[in-house]
Amino acid sequence: MELLELEQDQYLIIEKEKYKVLNKVKFIEKSSYWIEYKLQKIDNAERHYLNVEISGKAILYKIIEAKDIQIKMNMTIQEEAFELFEKGIGKVENYYGMTDVGLKEEVNYYEYKSKVDNQKILSIEKWKDEIEVSIGKIISLRNIKILKEFER
Image (cartoon, rainbow, N blue to C red):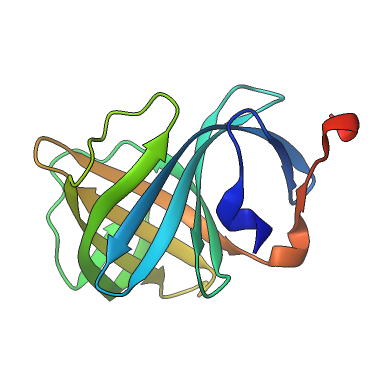
């Protein structure tokens, strides 16, 4: 799948918005892996993350401020209720671009689905020295277009 092999400075259209790939981190967990790309939205320079799993599932995230977050089965963030559906430990296998991760570094992750909209995902990543909280949504692969060099 092409989405697992994006290059730095490549451009994408995701749901009619244009993004540039800034970096890539490949995580492994047991016999599986997923890719996390840091993207910059072209029209306003916002930073987003696109997670792509080998199953073909893609989720577009935006980091949010969430102070003193407590990890539990049910969470309410931005007045929306979420329920834990997946957790685990990912290990950084490789990366490119400017990033603050190291090879073999581990992250505890917790993924929650919205109780109202099952396409909306809350992600909590617990690194050794920080917690990162993001809200995203599942993106249909048909709504992601990888731009060729001449299409930029």
